[in-house]
Length: 219
View 1 (spheres, helix red, strand yellow):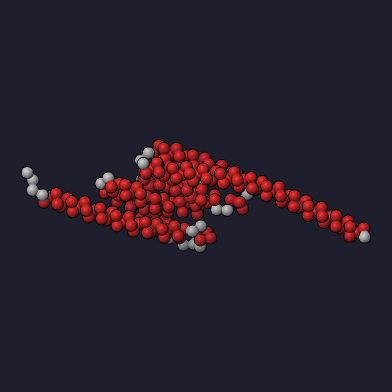
View 2: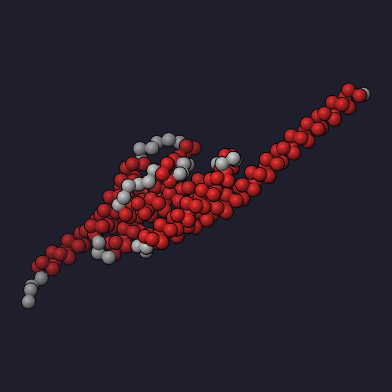
């Protein structure tokens, strides 16, 4: 009976040791997850506020808020780096996407070059979705400019939206690789068509108004 007893003890000890090691690893991963979740929520809040500041034409506030979003994102990325499986849970992708959107909206409104994934320090899939959502977000800015009578500016913003769609629509890979880019582009296409209609209507109304004023008798 001594040999089976010895085997039982050895097996019990090995199981207990393996479970203890796993427990410690999971505890570390859970702490990292909780820290990263809080940071990612901060990213999303700051990025959203940055975009709203852009629409208010407050570029300085927008840049400061985007910087705040970046700092929170770097914290999340750093704490999750030893736990890549946790980082693939989706919330880090969402934070990277929202941060990209804030920087991309600023670039589109300013008419500057689009920052690359490497420049922003985000994954390619998050970057593509963030840029696509930035183009959709540009509709609000476009409508504000049209209401102010800035038709040429509205046309320029529409062209920028078109450029984003044309650049991204060629990416034809499964959702498992792009994290739902196709659905995001479908939404952008619908926003584009509505925006194109708004710009066209405004242009025609402006031309008509000009023609009427040109025909009006002058005193």
